[in-house]
Amino acid sequence: MPLAPDALQHLITRAEALITRLEAVLPHPLEAPDWSASTAFRYRKRSGGSRIEPVRHVARIRLDDIVEVDPQKERLVRNTLQFVTGHSANNVLLTGARGTGKSSLVKACLNEYAPQGLRLIEIDKHDLVDLPDILDLVTDRSERFIVFCDDLSFDEGEPGYKELKSILDGTVSQSADNVLIYATSNRRHLLPEYMKENLTYKHTEDGEVHPGEVVEEKISLSERFGLWVSFYPFSQDEYLAIVAQWLRGFGVSEEHIAAHRQESLVWALERGSRSGRVAFQYAKDLSGRLA
Image (cartoon, rainbow, N blue to C red; front, side, top):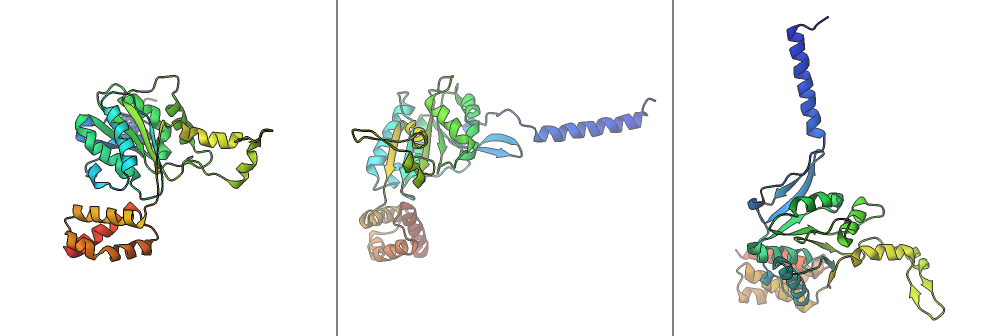
């Protein structure tokens, strides 16, 4: 028996609503953002979909703001300059003590070379499995892209590990010339290391020591980064110099900077760290109180 016109229309309406709901949850191809909207972008997954979002307010940190890490700054700036000028450059792994300026240096390099076409795409480690889609999206563009993963480390069996490893080492397709990967981590080898793994080391008759397969696998990812930049805890004098630099940036006078040296040391002692992050937090607090 044929449906009445009203019943047929009702069925069609419900079917269209169902299709709309299905389309909302089904994965969609990654679309290009408005590349002119910002110099920095974030890769985000929401409700089963993914997109690259422009960062509306990019951190204004400059290279001159970052002090007491001059050797590390020189190496990273040199590599980034080579990249934006079209010369060969390496993927970079910045490792070491927390709060020493690793991610700040990357952001400062972006601000320094954005006028020359440098762009940054920040990605979470859990989304590294989607790296090939991002690379396909930017390969033919004229800008130079840094894919940035902050605080990178992996637990056993995480899927992004193998994807990043293959991208760094080169898959069947050639790596894009306009893309580099910069990552920061507190771990040099990016994976947890256990005491029992020392038992896999092999000793030869002439006394040489060779790591076992488990250790070799954990070292292999970090080795694929062409440039390692290491950061170390700051001494007291270095910490005080960083505090003074930030306070000058906030417009605090040299008289007040000298008068509050001891207070800044107490601030660091209470937090158990003389890091650049702690120095910046103290400078914000003092400049606000003085204002």
